[in-house]
Amino acid sequence: MTENFINDEHCDTTECVIIGGADIVDYDRIKGYINDKCFIICCDSGLKHIEKLSVMPDLVVGDFDSHDKPSFSVETIVLPREKDDTDTFFAVKEAVKRGFIAFTILGAVGNRLDHTLGNISILMYLNSLGLTARLIDDYSEMQVISDCIEIPNSFSFFSTVSIDGTARGVCIENAKFPLHNAVIEPIYQYGISNEVLQGKASARVSLKEGKLLIIKVF
Image (cartoon, rainbow, N blue to C red; front, side, top):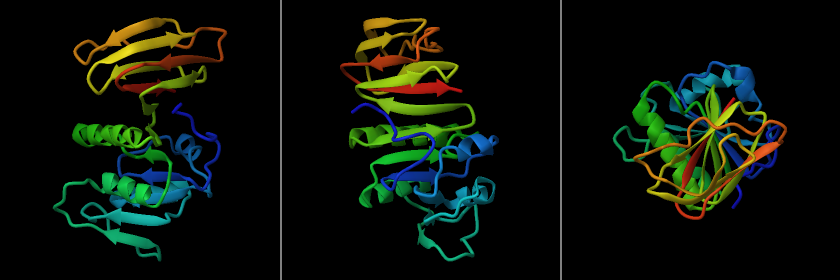
């Protein structure tokens, strides 16, 4: 499964956008990931973003410990405060049940490192199901891959982080720092801050075994 989305300028009806409650600064950039064809889920305090993102959720989920329940008419799932899943992880599982195959997660990287790492694990979960997912913040796009990805030259930098044991057979082509059949282990992450080679439209990252967290920096 090559980790590509239909089009960064629009979603289709198989794509779900999930909005969490972490801070968003560059709303104009984030709006570019949303279209009225996308199914939108707000997680609890993710509701604070809907006005600035100019969206109306199709579904709201949460235990509402950080935001009031919505006062407008929308499907709402109220969760218990004591539970195994975070509100965001529950939203992802609910969207999988409803048949969505591509996921864009916004407002999920913030000053709570524990929540950020938990949300990165969502990328691993969706990848394990063969589904496409990306996590967007004000500075980067993140994806987990288990095979290959093309990285456009519109990104300033990209990093490859081994996130599920040892990544083997790692190849990076058309990049400032190429690799061929390399091994990246969690104890030594040397794939940080690479660049698409000047004059190339994109770089290509592939691997034969394991998973890589791809961080594409704007």
